[in-house]
Image (cartoon, rainbow, N blue to C red; front, side, top):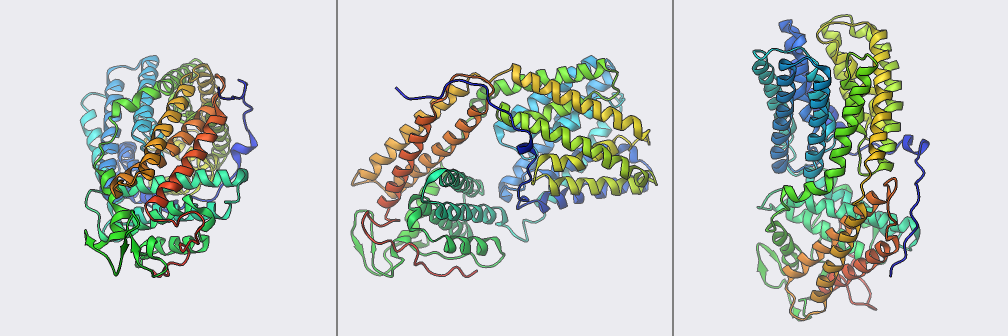
Length: 586
């Protein structure tokens, strides 16, 4: 029997939810992209004197916020799907708005759309900003007066702006075709270095190890998403990720300074560091996995030495594995879908009961709260309320400037767009300080409105949306979270047994070892994410925390054995030559 902590109600943080973090490494990319995507269509409408149509072009332009962490081959597909998803939600909203003015019906449609958008973004891991932008676009469109004859034209404007946003998102590809892969590899190397520095154990070391495992797994996913035909640059990046994996398997033998030097070089625009063969770092003869000596450079396949081929053969094997079907990823998201639909609908209904003209503000506030568990949802509610309250003060300050004319209004919107994306990586509430005036300024595109009324409505709807949305999250507890932890534990056990069996066997092929190692690493990352999500639920049965920790420890020992079996680490009791590799010149 496994020991487990008793079931109890968790304390919810307040001040901790507002703590500022380090700025996102990519903060400038979405910030500049959204400005580049919003500015041309909006300025063209200013010239044409039709700024009232800017809300539709902005719906398409905001798609430029997505997929900045994806390789360009994958980014092209993701952005296309985001644009199509935005157009689908907008089409439903515009049709509903043209067929009825019943506010209760419109709120219901908005809540159902929000639930669908939330689930689809979670299932496909599209984000950030995930479903929030799509929900904002569709919910706002529900309360704009429409006729059926206007719908095609408005959708055409959004589609044209979405196509422009797609071009903006893909624009850096010719200049830095491997930029996303470089950044993901650099993050993996930095995370492995951080773990190596805290490898003596303790709570800090455990946290650094989990972060490093997640970063390495994310780097592999980025490289695998880059396409089926790896280039010379991608092969070099894959070898660097292997180095990060080696550092995780034997952190005491790793050189954090060398890992960070590689990370700095990869982040640049110069030559990717060539790490050579990990089994020949001392200049001695190579050995195969069975221990046979290979003098000289050894046989070459796929354009590289044997050692390089062994490191990368598992990548090809993993590319051949079909992804999980979408329907299998939707089942665990049922509680989130119910939370979203119920919370958004109730928030909109309460806002209507209070006499609000724009109940979609409360609906969108509720939609923005729902995270992986109740603890994170509470933190997001605190961040949303604080950010919106400060944001309405900023709106009141910039309104005199925005009301100077259409051009001034567009420039204020662009500034808020930039500020929101530049700051939101440090904390959601800080980004909301700019998102709030942005949303309020968008309402003035058809014509200026009283500032005091807008501020009052926004404050009330924010409080309503946060309160009602969180109550709905508490009411709909994810009772299956514990079962998912059990399944994740089982998956880790099976992956560990397979990897251990291959590592102990005399005839394991490089492809099988690599595939088993990557599968085990992915299972460990999934276990930690599942356990963290389940631990933040409000009230549920006790979780097997001790089993989770023991499973992680056993998995990491097996990963080390597998890496050693591949020849990437020396055997126990020998001196490691891992830290004496060639320089990391760019």
